[in-house]
Image (cartoon, rainbow, N blue to C red; front, side, top):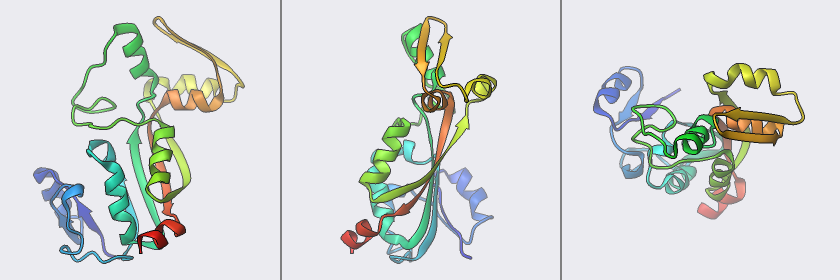
Length: 193
């Protein structure tokens, strides 16, 4: 097994370099994969952990990576969920949102996604979504566990009141981050060739 990492932050790259076979210190968008010795069809697993929301054009990045993947490769992405209840409550109750040093409203986030947006982006860039997992926001964990089996749920945070939420809607509002597993679509790989 060979592990190649991509990291643009010099401090994080120094740490990553000690744990990987090869480290490319650059922005994902700027990498010349051929010059780095990464051939088409040579990657069996691609992980983008909290990366895509930091890119100006994550659609282009996913499209550029797809030809590098083997036909049975897995793509795993984790992306913060902007449809999180805390963000909506802040917007509704305070009339704004505050960027922070980390988390959902990390000041370095350029793009924001809901689950529907994530699935659409994966489909548009030539990937089939195989599985979606939710990282439930810690502040809503107990509420979610107590209500996830109910056919309809009402909730209120300050003046924000949501009624008749389906189990899927409840899960999305309580999710801090989605982890999506995908695979390159066969027809998309043929189109790229």
